[in-house]
Length: 220
Image (tube, rainbow, N blue to C red; front, side):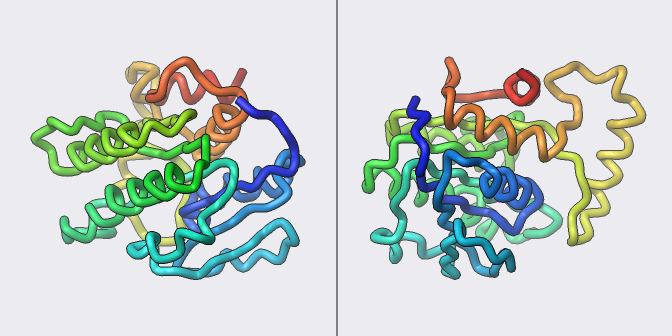
């Protein structure tokens, strides 16, 4: 892994919970002199390190020439409640990350870090787990030198939009936390974001990193 300074990070999903936290970490990280953000809406942060591109993420292939840097951080993801239409859900959770991986390979970006979810399985009978698994499989097929797929369990924290079911699940999991195996315990977005930066710099011995290992990496 390269630990040089003055690197350029590409960030997708910067307006989301984990992506926003990751952006703040990157802004404070001296290893990065530029952060290219690709998204539909502005992060509304005035910082000389930020180079913002307001684009249609379903058409990332159209801005291939701008999609150049040293590492890609992909924090794109939606939920069943927020995106009930399955075709749109797949365009987001499968289409955007896989297109980003394609562009990373095309532009010789050697590090690709993406958030998936625990239970992702391309052969699953569950649509949502299957989509995540198919995304992982396609990303890995690009053979990007340093590819890391993080599989967090339910991510804690508060979001701007209302996700009542997700919030109830968070509360329930916290109450029965002592009964839940380490791998399935709720994980904080700060932990996921920190682990993404760590593996981008130091690497890891596996491409796919489950939730309990994400915590170990972030806390090491």
